[in-house]
Length: 207
Ligand SMILES: [Mn+2]
Image (cartoon, rainbow, N blue to C red; front, side, top):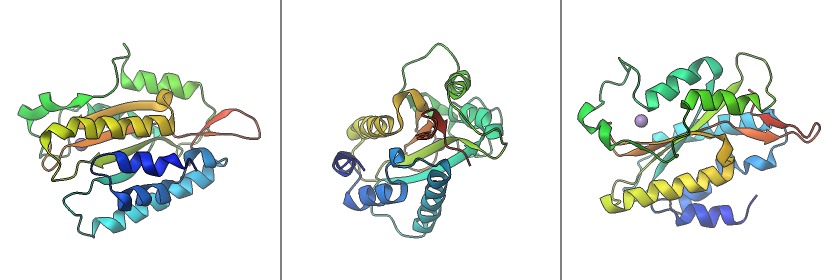
């Protein structure tokens, strides 16, 4: 594990020692996993722990983070949903007037996010099975008491930390939503890639 990860994570406004330690202990260091199954299990327990924590009352000065995983058939829709290209989304609390406040932390690539996803995925080895989780996402919600002027820095630092951790080339979307009820939050979607020691191929998280 990168000993700096805790310090870097904790330096993000709103992520205190408790959350930093929590995130690191749930997810560990992705590069430490040489087996995709080990990583998948870790992500699964992360989701489980984060779900359990939902029942705990969050302090106003704490950020909230949770993990999502998606199999291939869900990817195109989740990416479109994040950029508000779904006509009749399931969440009805979207405020259409505030959609303009949503923004991306990734420079335009000239191709759609889904096409970039397909392109990057084609460079990786991946089990050919329908249940393989080919996309993962962190949802990081800003602390309730963070001043508005600090929101931008909060999301940028969180993005930089995660992009460094999972590899910039694996980041598919990094989008701030300000048009939903509750606090603004970051959707950071990436292809979870682990190095395969045996074949030395770059390998996708596969389960
Ligand atoms: Mn959202």
